[in-house]
Image (cartoon, rainbow, N blue to C red; front, side, top):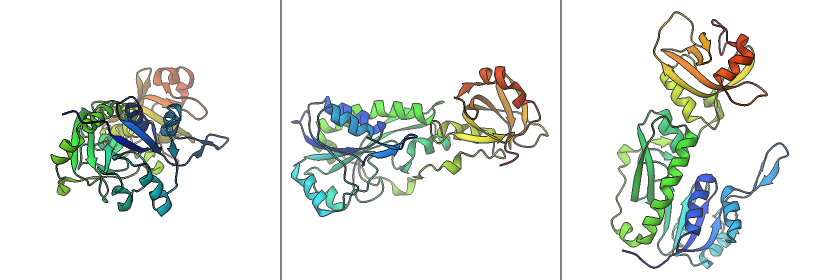
Length: 318
């Protein structure tokens, strides 16, 4: 059933959210305003940079609001004065108090990058890859005061395959935007058929820390390879070699044993650099040396083959 266009307020911050905002701008719905986090310093000069969502909103001449919190009563009144039917929230980064959830006539919807209740929390894309999940997806839910605990309105799945966090992010954004529009076109029906989440099946996707990116060579090659994909493009797995930090951008797990200590280079060629792990070998096929850019192993070996002699050891001085 096709309902009349909705009056929408959007809240989001990063690229993932900007993709969904772009779809709303092109839709039949009326976009009343966009909420995004305040401009942040970035780059070497630490100049203030607008979020991707703000940039998309401004390009479409949509009013932008950037309160540091939604808890003040004057901020909540400003939102209420917009008169939205529904608020769409995508990776906003601020907590919505119950008072805000209650403002729109049809409540607040959230686009979440997992198949809930699996991977509630801040880093569902990375944690799904890290855990070795074979599939993930997008869930549209009716927001409540809990952490990604609201009733589910719709979902769509996506195979993880050999995705990095970056490429999976892009695929999920592409399938999430059409699903959001589908739900909005007949929102009341989707709300009437909403499904409760099974809390007993929930898992938590904690925010990724830079400290996690340090490779532990005693782990299996399979685990390290998954983490390498999960932490690409941020924070990027790394180890040290001859006193320098080496970032690992792409790698795969290989079977194989040996007496070498974990972290020891077993062989190196244009096809990759094989490193002994707790079990198996990690074949590094794209890496980055200090002061340089990420390069294929073949390019690195052409210029710095002496760094990767068999017997050299990653992580010896970490």
